[in-house]
Amino acid sequence: MRTEERVTTELVREFVMAAHGDLEKVQELLAESPSLLHASYNWDGSDWESALGAAHVGRKDIALYLLEKGARMDIFAAAMLGELEVVQAILVAQPEALRAPGPHGISLLQHARMGGEKAQRVFEYLTVLS
Image (cartoon, rainbow, N blue to C red):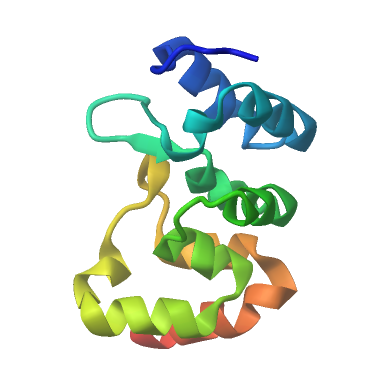
């Protein structure tokens, strides 16, 4: 088990990359370095992404695992997971989130699209608002 208090930029990048499609690697890295759960990687300029932020690829299993471990839900993951009530509540409190860019500039609507059938209600709701 890693004992450092801070994680390296390289380790954060590896963790976020794994969250795009490798659940076993995510589990392994998180077990070794629990502080990765809330870490974000800066791809370039203002393009920050956490492991949960990798929700744009539609890997519900990884997103749910991270949430189970204590990751903070955001509107983009909520859209991909089909959490309509969460998306609605955030948009009531912060209407400008509808057009806010997600990781890599990917839209909220695209996150809902990546959620497939389970996120269809969110996709339809966002389509009406757009």
